[in-house]
Length: 491
Image 1: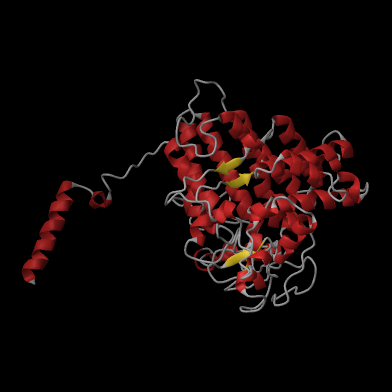
Image 2: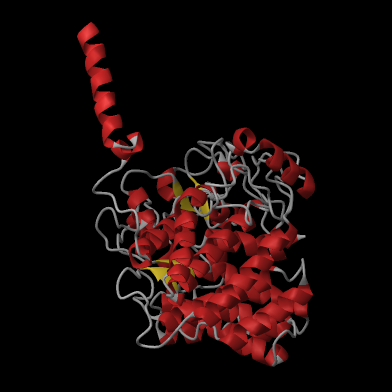
C-alpha cells in the first residue's frame, strides 16, 4: 500500500511539473471553437423534437389539453395530473438556448451577420415557447453561467418586448448577398436560403404580435403591421420544418415513439369534429380503428380525462395517422404558411392591417387551402370542403366574434401535431371551447377550464429559490407547479 501511495504522489508531482492540472481534463479530440454551421443542425433538431415530440409541449401536455390526442394508458396528464419532473421546456436552457447564443456571439465576433441573425431567430423561437408555457423566466441574466449563478426572472411582457427587438434586428441583419457568409451546410430547415430565414423571423414576429391581442392590443397591432410589411411566408415552401431522414437517430419522434410504445390515440373531440365537417384531412391525421369486423372499421377517438381502463376497448381507438406514426421521415413543423395566413386574417379582421373583413375572408380561405395542400389534398376535395356553408367565411355572421370563431376553429384543426401553439391559441381565445374530461382533477365538465401553464423545473426550488419565489408571487401563482393560473398573455 505504501508503494501505491508513493506512486500517486510521484504522478502528481510529474503532472504539476508539466503544467496546469486542469489540462488532463481536456479532450484532445473535442473541438472548443465550433462555427455556427456546425451548431445549427443540433439546435434545429433539438427544438423540433422538444416542441413537437412526445413531450409536455405537445403529445403529453399542450396537444393533449386541446384534445387532439387522448391517453389510452397511463392517463395522468389527461386528467391534469402533471408528474414531477415535468416542465415547460426548461431543458432548452442548457442545450439549444446556449447553442443559439453561441451562434449570436460567433456571428458578432466573426463579422458574419447571418450567423447571429439565425441565432437570434432560434433563440426567440425557443424563448417564445418557454414563456408561453411557463410565464416569467430568467432572460436578461440567463445564459451567463460563468458570471450569474442565480438569475432573476424577467416578466413575460419584458421577454416579449425583447423578442420583438431581436426578430426585428434579425430581419435587418440578414445579408442576402451571394458573397455573404451564411450556411453552405448545416441548415436542416432552409438549406442556407437566407431569404426564407428572413421570412421566418417576420412570421414569428407576427405570431407573437397576435398572441398579445388581449394583453396589449396596441403593441400587438403595431408589431403585426411591421412584421407583415417586412415580409412573411408566401407559400408552403417557406414552412419552418424539419424533414427527418428516416434512419436512427434522425427519425420523426412520433414514429420513433410508436416503435416501442402505444400510449396515445386520437381524441374523440377532434375526430368527431372533423367528421362533422367532412374534413378530408381526417384520414391523414388518424388511422382507422382495429374493429374485429373489418367492414365496421372507422375513425373513432377516446374521450379525454378518463381513468385507466375506462372507455371502449383499445382496438376501437384510432391511432395517429400513418403520415407520422408509420413514416420515419415525416416532417414536423415549427411554423407554417397556413398559420401565417390565419394570423393575417385575424389582423385584418381586427383592423390592424388594411382590408377589413373582405381581406380577412381571402386570408382565411387561403389558409385552409394551404393546410389542405400541405397534406396532399387535391383541388376537387379542397373545393368541396370550402363549398360547405359552415366553412364559408360569412357563414358565422358579420361580427368580429363570429368571424373569430371561424378563424380560430380552422386554425385549431390546421395546427394538429403542433400542440404547443394550439394550446397557446386556445388559452388566448377560448376557441374552441373544450370541456375537461369527467375525471379531471379540476374543471371537470366546465367548458374552457383547461390547464393554463406548465411547471417550472423542480431544481429551481433548490438552485434559485429566492428568485423563483419572487416570480411565483409576482404572477399570483400558488406555487411553481401551479398549472391553473393564467399567464399574462392570456389575461
